[in-house]
Image 1: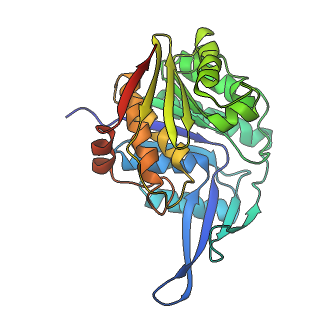
Image 2: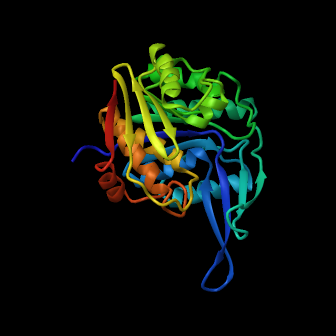
Length: 309
């Protein structure tokens, strides 16, 4: 059997996530507690796909310690920075489709925490087959060039970098530092990369980044086919239709699948196929970043790839 791939996930803003739902059998509140935030959702799916996963993030304070403990119970290796972090998301879903949110933002990282996170992430990435860079939703004190420097140093060490970042952060990163950049069509439009979300406009914008040195640009498009642009051309990946239980986390699951595929040494189109399958099946489940490896890999075989002229 091929060796188990090892993934390093850089998670600047891990969150303790608390979900409140109604137990239909007892007609009583039901509480679920998970490690959350973009980085941890990526890490959880990568682990479900059979990778060894190390998470580098800010896990300070009581809630940070709890999130780190919960991550370890899911067989994730956690290399924590204990200063800063500790954010919490409470989502009350008892009211139906419009859940009530309460967010306790993470404590910003001071310069000592930033140095600790950088060093920890760089060393962990050098020990991995792939490094995944994830972003933040709230201000956690990352300097504008922080992830750009990290991407450059990790790439220089020989570890491929897969990034799932918003346009404003991704634009600071040297294109040649990234093996794969994944971005949603909404982020591309909101970030001003393109004026509209048509396939032709998205393709043209992605092709511009590839021309500047990026190896592969993946555009997730909700219910529309995923777009892949590389120096060799463009293609779309179409998944079988599935009913949506919860659309949240599909993009993070896709990023995890792409990263695992790259770490396995798959051609980029097959890595994106695995990512598209992970994202599509995740929306049919309760729980972000969750799924079955065998089901995802089987589903990936049913994704059609069409090369664009």
